[in-house]
Length: 147
Image 1 (cartoon, helix red, strand yellow):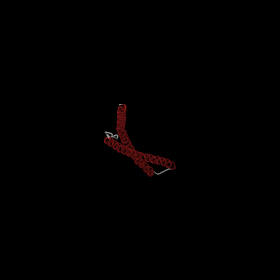
Image 2: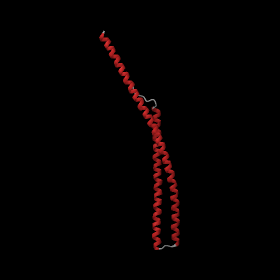
Image 3: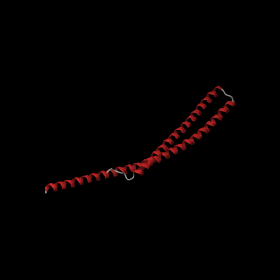
Image 4: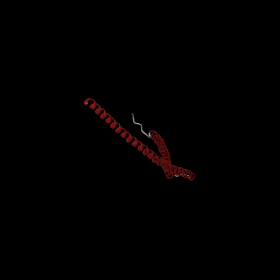
C-alpha cells in the first residue's frame, strides 16, 4: 500500500497557479526594466543636449538655433515625464505581481506541509501495523511451539 496524498489534485492546481504567477511576475519585471531603461536613455539624451547647448552658447549661436534647442529640450522633457509615469505604473504592477506570487507560494507551502504531515502519519501507522503483525506472528509461533 503506497501513500496517496488526499489533496494532490488541489496541490497540483496551486502549483500551476504559482508557476503562472511567477511567469507574470517575471514579465512585469522585464517590462519595468525596459521602461526604466528608456527613461534613463531619455534623461541621458537631455543631459548631452544641455551640455552641447552650453558649449555652443560659449561659441555663440543664432537665435533660431537656440529656439531649436529649446524646442528639442521641451520635447525630451515631455518624453521624460511620460516615461516617469510609465515607470511608476510598471513598478506598481511589478509590486502587485510580487505580492500575488508570495501569496501563491504560501498556499503551495501549506499543501506541501500538509502532505508531509500526512505522509509522516501514514508511515507511523504502517510501522505500527507492521509491529502488530509481527507481534501476532510471534504470539502464534510461541503458542504453536509452546503447547
